[in-house]
Length: 110
Length: 112
Image 1 (tube, helix red, strand yellow):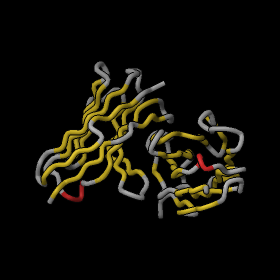
Image 2: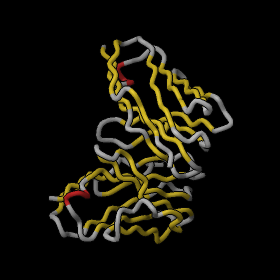
Image 3: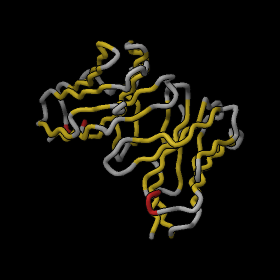
Image 4: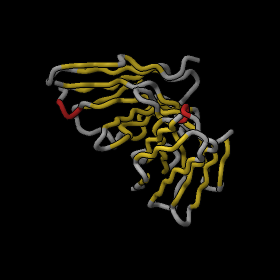
């Protein structure tokens, strides 16, 4: 069973600083790795999906990398803004069965 | 498209009562998921449907839980009888390929 861990559980940074969120997983035979954003009281929004054959994906200020050999993925958010405050979850696993991490709650201070 | 629509948004019920959660997936999506989120256990997959057929229900906690998908535009998750430990946020999600799910806003269930 895929185990996904996210450290730290919470992070607070001043506006403009770059964010680095870490995710580790136990089974390197991962089908894909996804990053989601969750705002309080809301559902999850998919941010980036990295297929197992890829090493990274980029969307705007977001960049996610995948290193299967070390069992790690990193989400970079450049030039953080207060609107980036949310909980970020990574998930990995099979083609439909995702194992989610507990998330990192990010606060960007204005 | 309005996205995945769940109802109700909030449900408070007494222990022992039947609870039915509803979900309308995004039109054209052929995969539907029910998840449960709690502080203790995080986000867990309860059941996965593909083309209205249950493919994986290994996450359904016990016989008190049941899910149906009578057609491509509607699914229900039923708990009977409900217990306080069922209190959680239940999410429905749908996708076209099964890979990249779009989540609804969730139903916050409180069983007292």
